[in-house]
Amino acid sequence: MTGPHADSSYTALRAQLDTLTTEAFRPELAEIDRLSTLDIARTMNAEDAGVPAAVAAQLPQIAAAIDAIAPRMARGGRLVYAGAGTAGRMGVLDASECPPTFNTDPAQVVGLIAGGPGAMVRSVEGAEDSKELAAEDLAALDIGPEDTVIGVSASGRTPYAIGAVESARTRGALTVGLSCNAGSALAAAAEHGIEVVVGPELLTGSTRLKAGTAQKLVLNLVSTITMIRLGKTYGNLMVDLRASNEKLRARSRRIVALATGAPDEEIEAALDATGGEVKQAVLVLLGGVDGPAAAALLTAARGHLREALALARTPAGQATELPTRRPADPLTR
Image (cartoon, rainbow, N blue to C red; front, side):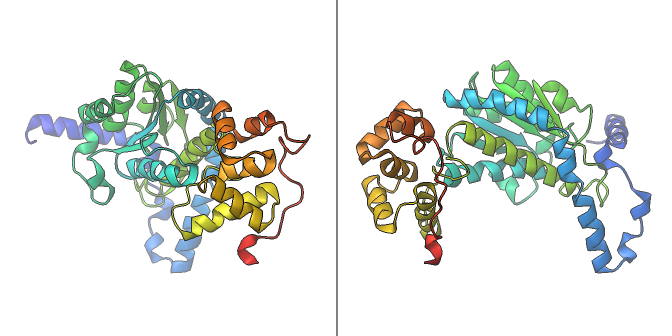
């Protein structure tokens, strides 16, 4: 676009960026390129150290969002992240790690990035500026009232992220806006606003740095705690782990050992009886049931292992508590 309208649009955008904390220039770092490599590394590390505190300030808002997300997902709803650039990549990353970690269906947690999958590795110019593109992406997923859409944007002004939230609300979905500026348009558009203010970046406007780290930390909290609420863990053990390679198969055996204290031969028998399903194998060993019964109990307990153990009426303490004695790490035997 050229001409007076383009000039006015540029002027308006520049004025908007000038108000954003994430875009602020830091004159005290204007000669950082003159420092030694070690001093630059120390400066950058010191900057990163403040990110967890910024996230901590938003924990009540994060917890409130999770408490709204989990019941919807328990009823079959989906969790969808939508963002552009680094923010979009963070969402895709978090979504892609849920199936192997929590044995979720790939369609249960979804990452949308402006410009489509190709934008994961190469910038798609103009994609982030389109609210309409976000609405089309959500329409393709047939987003509905049981779903949750989290718009992610460091600036909090990215049209794609705002468009995703606005479109999701018209469809009755729960909406969350995650940004790194206070008073953001994204947070205002969503039912749950999470604004992790990490301050100006080391490199002016490079929100792949502190802002990207903050987004990663928040998405870790959202997906992990939601999965805990859905019964995907037993204590701090990943009992819904999907063993898709040798390392994960070894980890599966270790998890069963940590959860039950059973000897190796019993662990192998339980995993064989349950087709390698870790959660079922733990129930076989702690609940004293066979493989089919373990599957039925878990279905009745909506996948929550502690509830299934209580249903199995195992001896007091065994059904509801992790063992106090942990066996030697089977990976080192």
